[in-house]
Length: 359
Image (tube, rainbow, N blue to C red; front, side, top):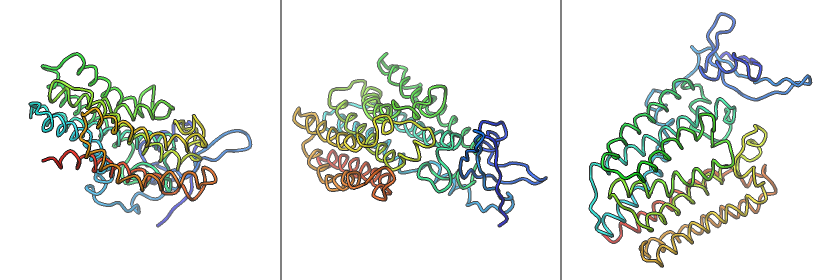
């Protein structure tokens, strides 16, 4: 395979076009361009170093494999877990009468919003050079040149628009509170990595993850499907939101130095690496406390709390990795992102099993 190295000025129109299209016409030939590193020059200018390969020589998998990797199915399941917990808890445990049509609309609108988040995050991380080949993060389809950022962005906004279309019927008989929650969810996704706020690249982005995957999601689902909600729905949202935040924070601990060098901001960078180690433990502890209090109040079955305790050894090893690390570039942090996601999956599954066991 023929490859060359190309350098483009930072913040130039040529750089933006190359990152968006994934291709560049150079020496009368169309090349696939993959950003490798940002180089600084003595005169103060910065440029981006690309690895360029003739498009005819670039190997790409079939479209279905590219799409499957881009949407990250595991993340879709995690987005549905809080909704399923609400449906089982309120519908079966409390005997609330659901609207089956609204339940289907909620599920598919949440899936579309999650797809939009995945795709738009990939695009913005790529354009900001946060994710580059060989780095941790994203689906990797852009970093391999399998699809262009321009195409991925179109699909991201298409799923965002579809989520709105699916959610509109929910507002026919909905309350003003449901409208408010829907707007928070829709605009939160739109501004999470894109738009003028780009919340994901600010310290507040971590808290937005907690809100959108936690209380806003569970309370909104209960209000949409059952036209009511109670404290247990909020407690469930608190639990799922905190586990999502802990997973997100684990990834930031692994990429702490790379994020700092790229100029990205997040909660871990804002509070510093040392405090971030304690904060990871705090997040997991608060998740357990919230579920425990929910069991005491009677809104959450005790078996749910008992089952999630089975995940404590995994959490212990995750926290231990952070404390064994000598700093943000330690090898002990290499598996933080993967293990954080695994813990989130197990906690979600165990919680759902706890609700289903009664039946």
